Amino acid sequence: MNNLLYTKGKILTREREFNSESFALGSHIINEEIHLADLTLIIDDKSASTVLSIISCVIAKRTIILLDSSLVERQLASILNAFKPGVILGSKKQMNKCGFTNQIETELFNLCKLESSPNKEELTNSPLLLLGTSGSSGTPKYVGLTYENLLTNCSSICDYLENDKDTRSVNNLPCSYSYGLSVLNTTLFKGGSYICSEEPSIIRKSFWDDLKYFGVTDFSGVPKSYRDLNNLDYKSLFPKSIKHLTQAGGKLEKEIQMEFLSWSLSNQIKLFIMYGQTEATARLTYLELTREPSKIGSVGRPINGVTLDLNENRSGEEVELIFKGRNISLGYFTGREQLINPIDNNCGRLKTGDLGIIDKDGCISITGRTSRFAKIDGYRISLDALEGELRLNIRDIALVSDDDLIYVVVPGDLNPKEEYIINRLKDMTGISRRKFLLLRLNIPITSSGKIAYKQLLNNIQVSK
Image (cartoon, rainbow, N blue to C red; front, side, top):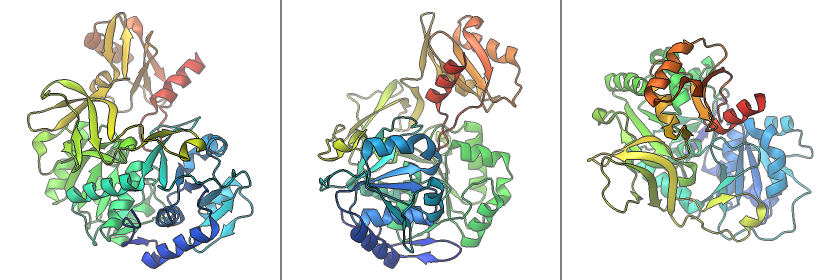
């Protein structure tokens, strides 16, 4: 692939600008300091150092693994044990926070060489980028992306976003999340500018000050981002420079989509609803909602280079979504030995585990997960469908099940009417109200803004 992703574009902070010369310097540092056989771990704290670490390693053709800084406490030890990286890169602040000693400080990032690195056996002639799956915790399971996967998906996304050298995006999503990484890649690929705000949280005033200061044109968010914005005065927060809003990372309630659709249409902003998985590098489908508002609730059609794998026309029927394309990852990696001679377990075909309905125009509506079903008293019940109905009135709610009970979880500070919820569920399912239990607990959220259902169920079972 060579350096096709990062030949153009800039990284901007309030203090300085980093361009292709900076990227070349970074790759030179990597080549000088890091052996080709070393796996490089990058700890992502959304800083410019993180972004420059990624770019430098890709240009230098290194195999890298990205770890969100919020997961360090839970995952770092197991990653070190399973993958045995030879080097860790990150910002000075993050490296100090992790307690790494003997750091090498460069003008772009800090690095720490680990003595635990195994003998210098080449990992692969074709370097990989390893990303954690949504909600990963405990024993790490990472998706192996080739550099061709990255470039292919980046090019396809650029086709419909039509971004260019004037595109300016921002770092509110971590690059250790496939959606966040795709924002970086599509921005630089077209020669645009990627803004690294010192405060990348959307609930902080300084973040919005930076959007206005830099004239940000593209904002990307997960459902939680748009829910939070909907609770804020978002119409006054966004700068007049905004041209694109993109949403992915899970299903956003239709009422919130309608709110942002109306505002986007009034302000000549393009609103894109997208669907993808880390296993597919990032994107699989897109819908330009401001162009086809009648398709609200859909995630659109497959991107260029991606096709639905259907044996026959199944229009109107619920099917498991299976996609084919050059953006499909090799599969999962759980340890260093798999990186020596990596195997392509997917062979360009991905069973997503998501269920969907395809309409006569080829637009896809996600209806749930194959694994998000409970079997209670002989009934097969879609937890996603029930959750979606309840969210029409109660936004912060999550349903999980152990096939004995269905647990209805709301945050501890929320006081919904229990009778209403249980009766509504009984009416929708036809099963006994004794099979539903309302709990007031914190709902765990992943770094990509999704509900961590597995962790939530584990928390419930531990507390019983």
